[in-house]
Amino acid sequence: QSVLTQPPSVSAAPGQKVTISCSGRNSNLGINGVSWYQQVPGTAPQLLIYDNNNRPSGIPDRFSGSKSGTSATLGISGLQTGDEADYYCGAWDNSLSDVVFGGGTKLTVL
Amino acid sequence: QLQLQESGPGLVKPSETLSLTCTVSGGSLITRSNYWGWVRQPPGKGLEWIATIYYGGNTYYNPSLKGRVTISADTSKNQFSLELNSVTAADTARYYCARHRGVGATWHAFDYWGQGTLVTVSS
Image 1 (tube, rainbow over the protein chains, first blue to last red):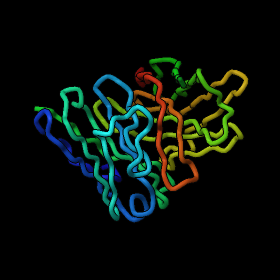
Image 2: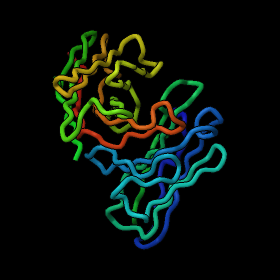
Image 3: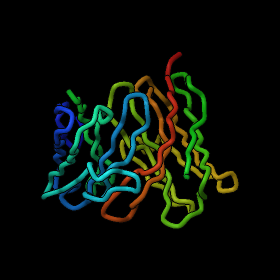
Image 4: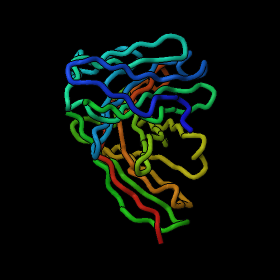
């Protein structure tokens, strides 16, 4: 059971927009920023978003992040088949003194 | 471009110690605000943070693994290492080393990752 809760799967058609939710608690998302990672099968995770809505250099602006209260959302617009991957949210949890992750969401581009 | 590479045995016997090393290239371990960590992923499962170190010596551990884990750094070799003792089958996972940003801030993120190394615990 992951500390952060994500839907197991989402799907959308190429060119469409999809959102992935991440739900937490006061001790993590309530007071700390969220990060998002993309993991294409067989490869290492890649950082997409840090501190709620910041993109590292090289990450296209099709990827966006937001947070409200104890919930965060990753948005991916202009879906491409290459976006098919597992997506994870993560944050620091002050109560657990731990970096916690969501269980991951599998994105299928139909 | 910062690169990280894990190395170590791919097979460890139960009750023994898992030892892995991460070699950093394209950057220095001794850089202010750079922390270095380990994250693992059991086959078919999600991510789990294990430990993080700052070159100055500060270490941080996942509370659920503390007591079995030691993270250390060798700045002369630009490497940091992980030791996990008393391993069981539950420790079978792909182990990643990564640069850990935001430690001490209100956000945390792993922005550069190694390719990962699969460690199987089996007799």
